[in-house]
Image 1 (tube, rainbow, N blue to C red):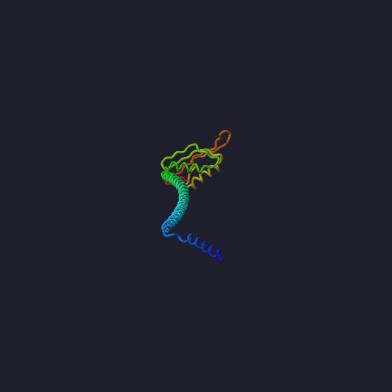
Image 2 (image 1 turned 45 degrees about the horizontal axis):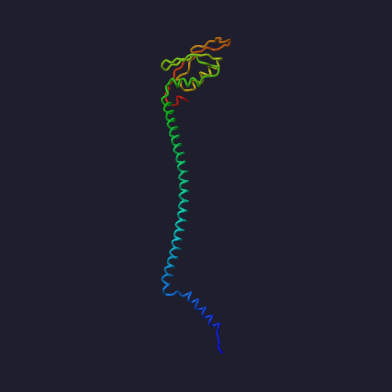
Length: 197
């Protein structure tokens, strides 16, 4: 009788086949090591490239943000320069106005004082100045308008003494009775920037 052990010999053959697949022959080991190194190098280079690409994208995004900020800063800088130029122009104008006020002449100050002192219902016809003496001639609708005018001139501080009434007379102009007057006063020194006020 002949016995055939099919189970044990089939299992041994399968185990030998797996061993052949798992165990690399000596002549193929160098190729397998080279292939492993090549795959590892490819994986390393791919990872490195992916990392560099990600870093490049991050840097590009930062550059885009920085360029947008730079554009905004340039616009703000331009606005600041315009505002600074405008401020310098206004300062020059104010300095010019101050210089003009400081060099304002006495007749201008006198005329300004007289015009600010005019009462309602009063008008001037003549103004004469001889040194410090000033004589004004005009018409008034009433004596109270004339006294208001004289009071305002004295309160202005531009006249050294009281203002004298030289003449007054009543006359008719366009069927209206008016007071014709002439007054005289001595002016003080009329210089300085406060004279225009």
